[in-house]
Image (cartoon, rainbow, N blue to C red; front, side, top):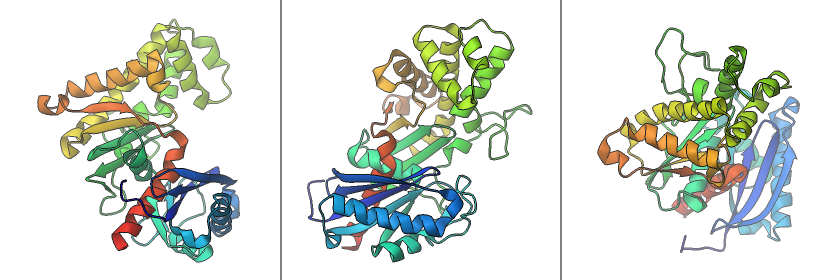
Length: 337
């Protein structure tokens, strides 16, 4: 961080709904930000061209000349081949199969591009300028529709040999015959229990079983299942016993998934992020969730590790994807120069 250069970097966060583009200086400070709709149905070629146009518009908005930008970082969800820069079969980008997105973006933007998975990019953002600064062994778990994960070891993200390192949402935590189904088609994965989807499914089951709770009418009147985790959070803040129980259950399931990660990677810190953090450190429920996660995990790991593990919340929110992508571009550029 102290070796600041005069070069700047662009981070692009490709999502199923929007493409976020941020321009950052060498210190990770945001100079400009723009977004454009992904328009998945128009295909990857169209989206990549608009992505490049948005990059140039953001650079202009930052008051920079093109030659003052060293490199672009692109983070994307889905299955991919990082060495070849290719999307494989991204589930939330249907029809974008086997598309060489890294090289296409480099062609249309006229800038070199670093390609990254969105989970590791978010983790690197927290390591670079977020809550994980100074942590040489960092894991970031993002709780949303699924459970994402990014791993930073000794200043570098761990992508695995086949570009799928850190798929912790698919850690096996329930081996019973009646284990819950994960959206990947397997039973018993962490994502089926600790994601927003898992919270919604368990809440519906409790309401249908007629547990006494203030959630009943709200859950029955819902328009979409993805509204339920926010309902659980609100009622937990109001002291509803079932809502508090669901939050604590979710924390315990998440801790189960963390145990293997901790014993395998020996991190110094695990950060929790994503859309479902129950208010984070700013709320009683969020603090209770974090404390329960740590307590349940530490009860199942070596004492030596438990005494040294830090569990906290990520701080960069929805900006983490493009910030991390820019940071990884910066790192690659520096290693080459």
